Amino acid sequence: MSSALDAATASRIDHVFFVACGGSLSIMHPAKFMLDQASASLPSDVYNAAEFTSRKPRRLTPQSLVILCSMTGTTRETVAATRFARETGARTIVLTTDTDSPLAQAGDHVVDFEAPYTTGVPIDAKNSNYARLYQLVLGLARAFDGNTQIDALLASLGNLQTAIDKAQETFAPLFDDYAPRLARKDVIYTMASGASYGAAYSFAICVLMEMQWINSQAIHANEFLHGPFEVLDEDSAFILFKGLDSTRALEERAETFLTRFGSAENIMVLDAETLDLSGIDPALRGNLVPLIFFDTLWRFAYKIADLRGHEMLEARRYMKKLDDY
Image 1 (cartoon, rainbow, N blue to C red):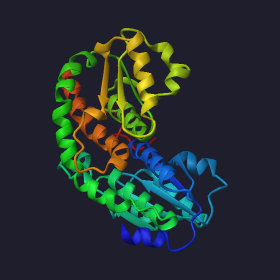
Image 2: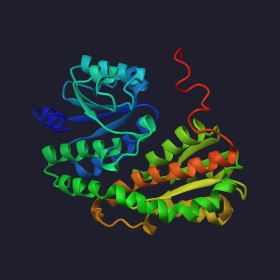
Image 3: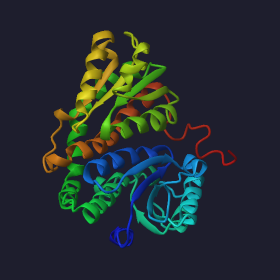
């Protein structure tokens, strides 16, 4: 981590690109949210890896930093995006669990992280991809803007796993209540804004659709009121994330509309204000809450999988089963 940051900040950087696919792309949205609020000198963009190489943004130059992520380090589009970025002269930092993977070999600098979804071994959340990415972001903000939040972040990450464990207890009755009803649904929408949107996106496409075969869509809390709310009726199922960042009011407004025209028994609200966040710096709680949402919802996912008689990972038809697409 420190060597990657030292290399990235050794010379001028004028733009940051966050690039990945799928679940790894989902963590890039809160990273940009954090950088937007922590740095005045580093504008950034988030790209799907394949679109990044296809679009060829002219803003990509030798003064750019491209941060890419693939859990296994084998995502072909992300490896290709890394090579494309280096061909332009841009610096690259890649995040992966496998430091010998194709992605690691393609990037300038490698930052490793841990993921229980590949090993089955529980981890401390301070070693997750989210945590590593946030350290990179605030390290950059310190170097280029004098932002001093990195020490508070490191201290907060040390207490994050405890907060997640407590959140599991807090949300357990909610999950027990909603799982039987939502397990019967053919469509479950997720909704959030700000730093939490990435977690809602990941749960929709990687868990509900990929692992459960439940139709889903991650809807931005404000965009909901600009078209998508027309699907709402008393049978519609939603999971709403209410975070603690500066966009919480958008999620509260969406909740008001959901409860006005929908049925409370089909609308599960994860409210970060109900959580014990002791040891997490108040200024960073909005950024770290999405990690708690993401981790705790895995327990809910397995609950609905059991009720549906569906295996979470093993039942996938295409993911990790085909390599010719």
